[in-house]
Image (cartoon, rainbow, N blue to C red; front, side, top):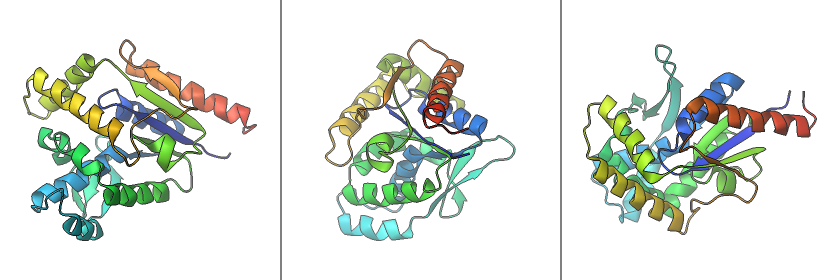
Amino acid sequence: MKQLVIAIDGYSSCGKSTTAKAVAQLLHYAYVDTGAMYRAVTLYLLENDIAFDDLAGIEKALHDIHISFRRNRRTGRNELFLNGVNREDDIRQMRISNSVSEVSVIPMVRHAMVAQQQQMGRKRGVVMDGRDIGTTVFPDAEVKIFMTAEVELRAKRRQEELAEKGEIVPLDDIIENLRKRDHLDSTRAESPLRRAPDAVLLDTTHITITEQVDFVLDRASSALFAAGWD
């Protein structure tokens, strides 16, 4: 059976990653969290004191950054490894959230990450979530979803995620961070966050994760049926 590319784009903390992981698991597809890749680059630059406007330093750093994903057999999570070291928890810190949009607007960073993402999905059978999957990385994806939700709810979800990791952050700070990231992601010159013309809108404000997953699975089934794949 021919396999699909499922592209899930949208704003931060809409449930993209949780939904994408569940869909990938149910379909036995690979899952790629592209946002984690930009977070990994951000972490590397911060830890190596490379300024975000030091383009020569960033270009050199990109040659030294090797990103991979490995499934944790104990938790079932797909975790990010940066240069062979598990940095999954580190890239989720608020300090990374505060800087990742500044890094992701840098053209050479986007070009490098998009090339890696396209390589990861070249055999298809992949669920990929991010900001520009359906518009730039895989414009030919058979299933495209664009997710959104009210910013206050997104902030509460993010606050709960951080609290689970022992990081307590005021809700107002998270709302400000999300609004800043939304603006930067939507207005950047290189691969801005936008809904592809053929992407289906999914507002997750008042629905459960199970309903989100079912929504995407229904679209996947429809895409397979429409193409005559069985």
